[in-house]
Image 1 (cartoon, rainbow, N blue to C red):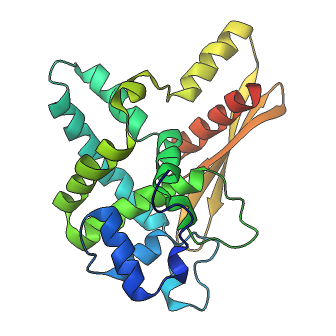
Image 2: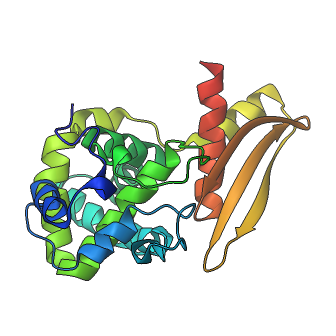
Image 3: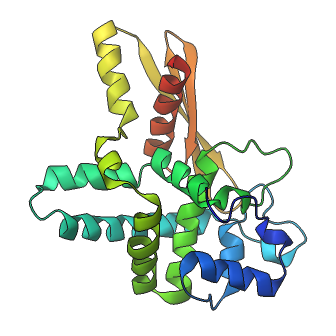
Amino acid sequence: MSLFRGIKYFLLSDNSKHKILKSILGFRPLNIELYEQAFTHASVAGQEDEAMEESNERLEFLGDAVLGAIVAEYFFVKFPNKNEGELTKLRSKMVSRSFLNQLAIDMGLDSFLETSADTRRSKSIFGDAFEALIGAIYLDRGYQSCKKFVTEKVIPDYVELSKLIKTESDFKSRFIELAQKERYKFEFKNVMLQHQDHIRYRSILLIDGVEVGEGEGSSKKKAEQMAAQTYFEKRK
């Protein structure tokens, strides 16, 4: 269990926030406001508290790109005998929404996230917060600090590479294969959610017109993956 389980970040004093972030990141943050933004869900952004004027979704966008580059380089060096296709699959697994969701929970970051009382705290928002944290580190300390955090703290402490290699991440492709085999009539119905300063997508998976899965993400691809994953989770 993470040492940070149950810690309510926004209830800490500024000095305690610096200390807890240093424990997690391995260095003292320079701009604490970036990390406050990383842990601020859209449901509470824009409230009176100046620290919550902007949600973590822009940082999530940035962190997604930075994390992808770091993970690609890590696997490129770690597995010199794997070909492009194998490396692509490994990277996709580690940056998949389902993997990052569980990673954030294992690290205890789920209790850091500030949301409104009526927000459905689905696992997907925790993976989003982890990507936002990467974005905050990048803006605060640069690419090398992000790389050091991921490769020297996150992967050694929270990622079992042997288990990751066996992990399934492409739930949409798995569903399509099943649908073709069983001759399901299906569709992914995507809805664009327009917020004040950002766009998100909700995907609803339908079989013969009946909803069997739902997901949300910063892109249609992520939302559809989550919808397919939800479908398989319901089948267990």
